[in-house]
Each structure stands twice: as C-alpha cells, then as structure tokens.
Amino acid sequence: MRKTIKNGYSSDELSEFEDLIKNKLNAARDELIYMKGSLDKTGIDEVRPNVKLFEESSEESEKENLCRLATRQNEFISKLEQALIRIKNGTYGVCMVSGELINKARLKAVPHTTLSIAAKRRRNF
Image (cartoon, rainbow, N blue to C red; front, side, top):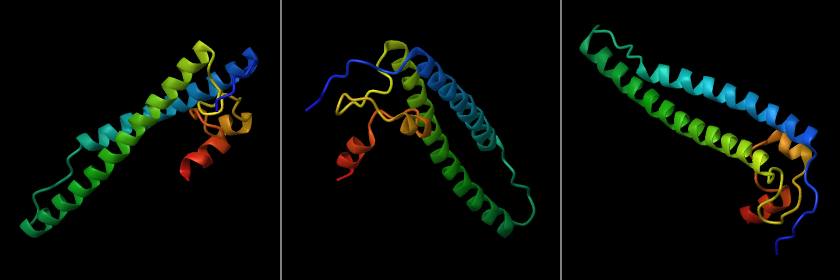
C-alpha cells in the first residue's frame, strides 16, 4: 500500500542533492569518455605470430570487459539524469513503493535511488 507524503525535502536540501548528483554525473561522464578512448585504442604490434595471437585474445577480452563497464556506466549516467529530473518535478527523495521520504543518509550514499532501504529489502526477497 502506497502512502502519500505531505512534505518533501526543502529547497536547500534539494539543491545540496542536485550538486551532489551533478558532481557524480560529471565524474561518470569523464570515466565513460576514458573507457571509450580505451576501446578505440589498438595496441597490438606485429611481433611474432604466437605472441600476436595471445595479445589479440587478451585485447579482445579486455575490450569485452570495457564494453560491459561502459554499458553499466551509461546506465548509471541515465539514473543520475533521471534523479535530476525528479528534483525538478518535485518527486526526488520519495520512495516509489511506500511514497514516504527516503532517508537523507541513503540519498547521500546512493543519490539516484528511488527506493527506501525497507522497500529495497522487500524487493530483494
């Protein structure tokens, strides 16, 4: 059963969260740029056929890992951008399950969350 809250976080608190999210967003975008740059690099030299084959295999594995990390980073960036939208539309910090305010400490640790700890625990069972 979803409860409706009457009061959200103050404009000062929301501004604090917004700054935190923007900082995380900038750092996440920088990391993604770095990952994409690493994916674009090809570092295989023509040394010996066996060494080259091993290096190609190793490089391919590294590229797959970087692709997975870049995908996760894109998802993280998207969640941070959605959190900024929730700040703008006045729904930031409200648990999507219970409708109650999410604990401020939780929002500082995971500013893109949409669930309170209790709702998160219930979902994991």
